[in-house]
Image (cartoon, rainbow, N blue to C red; front, side, top):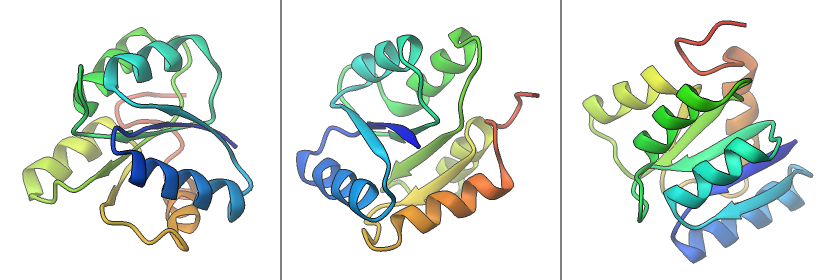
Length: 128
């Protein structure tokens, strides 16, 4: 899969990228802030967007909302976030295909993604 990883923490981005490339065999494009993530997501073709919630310039929820409004053929979005309150998780699930809590296990990150995608192929609210 071709994955856009929007993550502002360099260490987390590096770990996720290595995990997804080495274990999952995916091609990763990195974006270090929300504005850049949205710009890249709207002009390049991806199979999946992994989206941190707390990023500079635009948070993940706003990136997700704007992407879903503007993308002609949206791809699944999975949030990566340390936010774990029920209200946050409900918001992630309302807008996206799923949620993975930080810290995540790099050895199982690919499996977690595949499990989410097996059951949800498009963001909630979008129809094929």
